[in-house]
Image 1 (cartoon, rainbow, N blue to C red):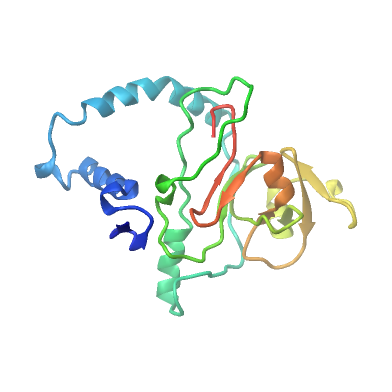
Image 2 (cartoon, rainbow, N blue to C red; image 1 turned 120 degrees about the vertical axis):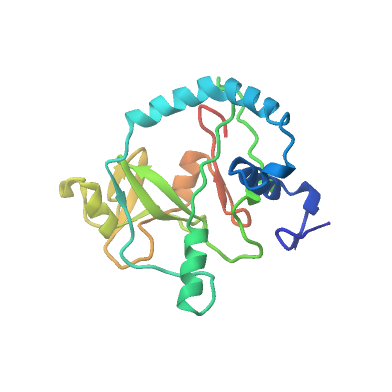
Length: 229
């Protein structure tokens, strides 16, 4: 089984969901208008109507927590993209794009935890083969914090000082060494004053707190929420 789109084994080209999504995107933009059956979008319109109430609820929650700003990084790092500056920039723009995956349609009502799985659909936006780290963007103290490294090999959750300074958290919340230094959003971070290509590192303790599962091959982090995984 070989996918000509990903140039990798694991699934057939005809089964590639990412390729299908790319084709649908071209159709929406009108590039494939002459190849499209005009009656086909009916089912998709019905699906959108069914999803509308859930999307409205999510939008209301997002409006209540609008980010106060965006925290970028001071220094940068490269995992792939070759030895040329232009190649690294182009690869970086593509690999640093963050996708928002729609929530499950039903609300969580308690009881057994949902099963977290990874499938071919999770390869969307991933270029195989790769050696990229799992880097995410999170909302921290109402700031959109970019370049957060997911590291299941780290026993600590680390927040670098250049990012801490931009969060506008009072400095008196910091305590000297030996113990975790600052806590917020139910997660305790060790604040480190040293140069880093990242703003923060979420290690095993943070991942366990979230109930998160990481797939480095898919470059995806999944965790349960009240809307599902």
